[in-house]
Length: 256
Image 1 (cartoon, rainbow, N blue to C red):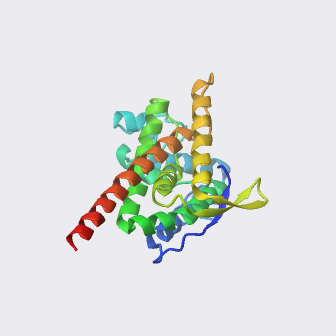
Image 2 (cartoon, one colour):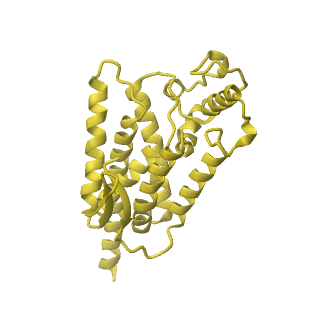
Image 3 (cartoon, rainbow, N blue to C red):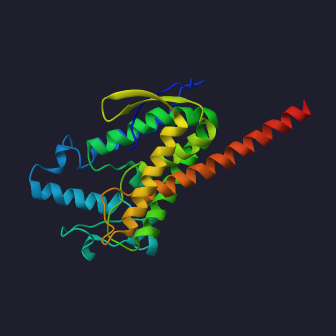
């Protein structure tokens, strides 16, 4: 992340129900998942817990090898786990479910902070249905973009980063004039133009994505490719939706 956003000065006209609902669902899914220590029903034994996590990810996470072939790997195929268990899965659906999974509380918190700060503005400017559609569609694009970049690897992709990057791309179109109070270096609050923070976020992710693609192993726990594809998809979606709304508004003005 380029910085930790704290607040946006855009005053929403109505309660951002979709944004708050997405935050709540992400938090709830994490608390109920085996990655959360609160989910004690998955067992206290470390080995059993690890298997529960692996099988959970195999069922709900997006795996590039599955997205590209359309065929589930299954635990019996030894996909990134030695644990046995029956796993039923539709690979295409995992590109959606993976958006609501997070590896740990820090991963969850980082994503939800960005969604909480930038989501209300985009939802207010574009409308609730359009905002939700952009969030989900850009998240799917991010998953498949990551799969195309990485190839048929058996690495689970989890997190809302791709979808939130899409929200940031749309934000750059619909409300780049806002100013955002941002925490730099973890302790220094500064008031920055929203476009500067969002553009820096994209530039940093794009640089890291290119750096990894040129490195010998090209492996990193952060899916920067998904961020880049999600952001570009959000940028294009924001342009399309905003232009359609502007032209519709212009026609109504001409009629009156």
